[in-house]
Length: 306
Image (cartoon, rainbow, N blue to C red; front, side, top):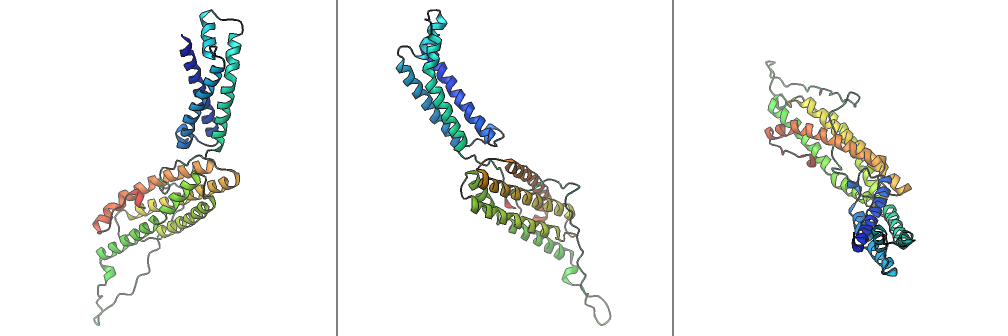
């Protein structure tokens, strides 16, 4: 192998070395896989690559014509002199030290981003230990009668009217739940970039309280006139339950970032897991709700519209 190829091989090994150091530091800070390392760290890859090559070339020029690659190529060919390998390593030390040091600094200081796929998604099929809400039948209103004692039909006796009223109550709660999605996404993105932490914490705490209230409101919905209404309501309650728990986990992650520095900790991972569960529950709810909405002249929804 001619000397230039040896030098290219050395540069490739240096490149791989500092990328490995940077990724190990990022993973140690909480990232579970390389795909969670954000774009700003990728940018450091390119900066460090250029730096590694520049420093290497400087050390090589200092030893011209005896660059590390030249010395090792000569040793491999059998024409080497005593101390060629040692001198090649000596020339390589400044490059190795600087690139590893910069990789450590980059890995420790660049904020990790939160790879939250759907910050406001909600949960899976309810489990046995999940809080169960029981429906309290409404107190029947007195039925007007005529002088002869024959009951006069009222609007609440009409099945279609009752069904429409119950569907509108569900739709109103869904519309209310959409309002806080923007605040939640903004807060999580900001914490992922390690900025506006106190404001983001206030937003997350507020959204968590809203989700708890919406969970209770969903459990109190009257759905006896809606087809498969009990199962539909159960999935909606699960969605709000898991969403509230996820928001609380993201708030705990934010508190940890404020007190101990920004990183992807166990609270962040728990928030993602709960969000995935809540997304499954939303899908189950929507599978039952959208046909009802169509039949009642109400808008259908996607999982991002809850």
